[in-house]
Structure formats: C-alpha cells, structure tokens
Length: 142
Image (cartoon, rainbow, N blue to C red):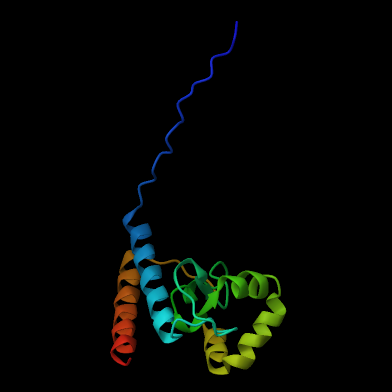
C-alpha cells in the first residue's frame, strides 16, 4: 500500500489573545512610540535615522528579570538593527558600560527599581494612560 500524502497545507490555528495580553500589546506599542519620539528617530549608539523594521526599541535591563521596568521609557532605548544585534546582544558587558556612561541619570533610576513584577489589567491600564500622557507631552514639544 502506498501512503497517501495530502497536498493541502494545514492552516495554523490563530491564538485568541486574552484581555491581559491585548493590554500588554497596547502598552508596548505606546512605549515604542514614546521612545521613538524621545530619541528623535535616531539610533542612540550610531545616531543613524531609523524607521520601520530597522527601529528596535530595546530594554536596558531585561524584562525577564526586571519586569517592573518593562514599559518604563527610561529603561528603553532606540537602536538600529545592527547596533541592537551586533553591539547590544553580542557585547552585553561593554554595552552596559556604554549605557552607564552615555545615560548616567537613566542608569541610576533603573538601578533603584524592583526586579520582578506581574501585571494586572488595572495596572496596565494605568501604565497605558501614563504613556499616552508622555507621548502627548513629547509630541507637543516638537
């Protein structure tokens, strides 16, 4: 007997996001907008103009160990793809030193924040509102 192979491809099941996941997505999108405006659309390391997929919003302290800083703009920086992958991730010690020297006030602030945190929808709603206020403040100042 010859095995039968279907020529039809299986469709991937689309995951339905929970309200909490959707709120995380909204907070992250707004945090990225705030950082992009604050950093004037420039990579903070090489100062090249970045747009679209080349604009990487990156955490200074990782969100896996510093969850309370996940959406805090002071813990975020705008980098181009090259600087994000080839500098920040491949040379973490050197990159950390660069950040401390380049942004000493931001470094002091993020060092004082708690490491881990889990968010409820109420927390995320408050964070989103704060980010929207910051976005409006920065965009009005242009």
